[in-house]
Length: 323
Image (cartoon, one colour):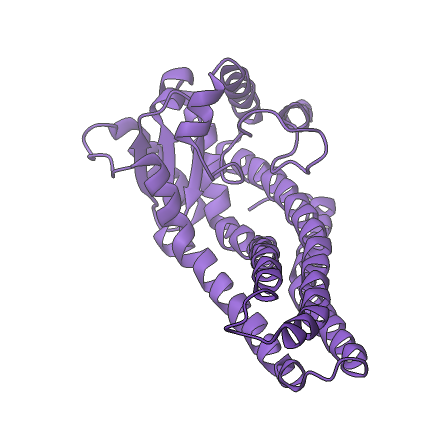
C-alpha cells in the first residue's frame, strides 16, 4: 500500500528495533543469571542451582516459542470471544459486503470475512492472516457513519490486511507478554521460597536459608531484567503501531482517493467514543485496544498509547486532501 518514503523508513527502523528486542532480552537475561549464579556459587555452594542454569535457558527459549505461536493462533479467537461475534449473513449487510469485496479486489488481497457485532461503541478492526482475514465492524459504527465514511474505514482495514499488520503487531507484542509472565512467575517463586524456609518436610532450616540466599536474588534479577525489557519493548511496539496506523490511513486514501471521507469518519468516531459510557467500552472491547481503528478511551499520559492521536491523523489526511 502507498506510504511516503519517510514513513517507510521510520516504520522499518521501528520494526527492526522491535525485532531485535527478544534476542537482546534472552542474551541479557542469560548473562545476568549466569553471572549471578557464578558469583553466588563462590559463597554458597548449591550445586543443583548451578546445574539448573541450562534448564533456565531452555525454559526461557520454550516460553518464547510458545508465546510467538500463541500470539498468531490465539489472538483472533480471544477477540471473537470478547465480542461473542458471529459471521453476518450475506444478505443482511449486502452494501457493506459489496464495498469490502471491491476494496479487496482493488488492493489485490483475498476478500476478508465480514463480521458485524452488536456494540454501543463504534469501531472496526482486522484479525487473522492475510489469506484468511476477518474485518469486524460494530453496529454502532454502521449507524454512525454514512456510506462514504464506511467505505473509507473499510479501506483502512483492507490496508491493514495488505500490509500484514495483524501478524506484525501480534509478533511485536510477544516480548511484552512474555516479560509480563516472567514477572508473575518471579513473584510466585519468591513467595514459595520464603514459605519453604519454615517447611521442615522439604528442607532443613539451614538448607532452606541457603536456597533462599541463592534463589531470591536469582528470581529478583529475572524480574528486573523482565521489567526493563517490558517497558522498552512495549514502547517500541506502540511506536511501530503508530506508524502502521499512518500507513493504513495512506493506504486507504490510495484505495478510495478520498482522504476527506476518512478524516471525517475518524472525527465522527472519535467524538462518538467520547460520549460512550466507559462501562460499554470495557465490556464490549476488552483486549482489542491495539486493533481498533480509533483508540478506546483516554490514557494516563504515562503509558505509550496504542494509536497516534486521532487529531494528528485527521490533520495528515486533510493535508493530503489539500495537495
